[in-house]
Image (cartoon, rainbow, N blue to C red; front, side):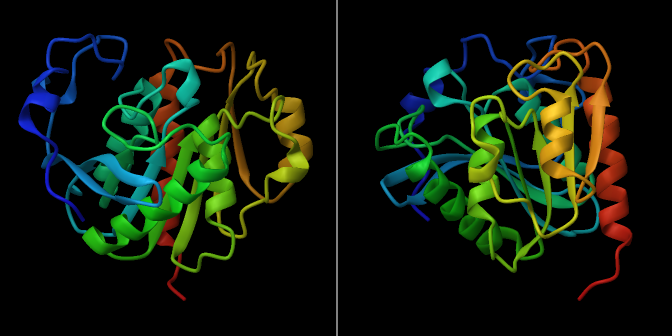
Length: 243
């Protein structure tokens, strides 16, 4: 792990609109904010990666990594879906690492069409384990879900996977390995980037699929339903007997 990012670099973000949820209120300014939240840099394969770590709430269950959508479309670790997922994971007892892929925010390197970003995800898994141990819950939204699916293959530390809006309309389903651990996929019924029909054909009976009726790819206005799905899934994961 490297040192915290320069104070002036972080301060430059304080007044910009955030993407955390429909209210636009960053968690550090919210009356509901709980748990320790820390911004810092850690080592990635192409240089430093910017991370935001949230300590678990209640008894520690392990660690988690949740990745953001497509870097070239302006997505960052502050994405509202990513924030909501991280909040659910922390409340379930997992220390959670959100991070910026290479070339985003303070993360070094350049966009690598998913190849290098998969390696970034693996580095984030290593960092999460270092901070809070295994088991690890892995997941991501859209592009981040695809990177996560590729990164967790054959990783025995990963106990479960959460994919929101898996972009199966733009990613070849054959290029995305199905997780070999308990998995949850959340999709909006009107998602044009990962239509429910394609998701069901790809995942089959291998995972739990929750379709949010009337929701688009970004689950605009339906994030509470996302949290309910994640909370239920994580409760079931916690109940499963260990290896």
